[in-house]
Length: 332
Image (cartoon, rainbow, N blue to C red):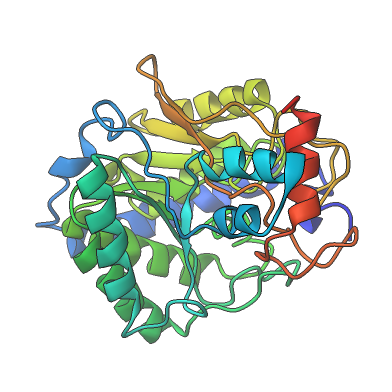
């Protein structure tokens, strides 16, 4: 499958068809979320987490392991790649309930000792990747809530949580809007109360109409979080994502903040989403203090496969050839 099913019709047309029902849904569900979240401490969401600390580089990354087994110019490229901080993905398959808290504690402690900010990507929602299936999995609702609670308790106040890439962007097409909204709203409350700075994922600009996404973000309580993330694991250009993020924020009742994943967008998008050829690394992570953009981040570790397409291994598996291609296409 070369183009996400969610991208087959234009964002504007989908927006016109879906915005009115979403507004009704937001009004009803939003009141319920407000009533259930009174008392949630959102003080950690008030400032840019990257203003005083840069993103943490995890020494246990797959890129680091690949560099150790490489040689020559490949090793040099991979070592440089391993030195750039990326998101640390939390999945119930790799870090199940009962052990995820210990793993997060270790990451947070290492980051604190280095004076850095760990970026944790929470990716375990029920029926995850319900469209394409390359990253299928996740936990049943009751287990998911407990899993998120364990992450929240361990994350502390000096970390960042990117909440569920693709979950809102796929919710309508997967006929899971009600369940996704409830689970994500609960996750926002738990994470905000636990202390990390939270960004709820908002897909990307070629996927969802900004007004529709703003309605969904409002329904899950983005006003209690720091803001939202865009282009996670995507290839959309900086310019396109900046315009999309501005439009989403402007459509919210109260404009908010956002981060953009630039890990693989150096050549922009050609409409392909699964291991497209000719792509390149994007701008390296940096803190931004102007407007609503908090930072450009490498949330998706470059070199991790999008799935079994284009000769790639399973989703999330490190693919050395892909990592080298992305780096060399960026002029490394």
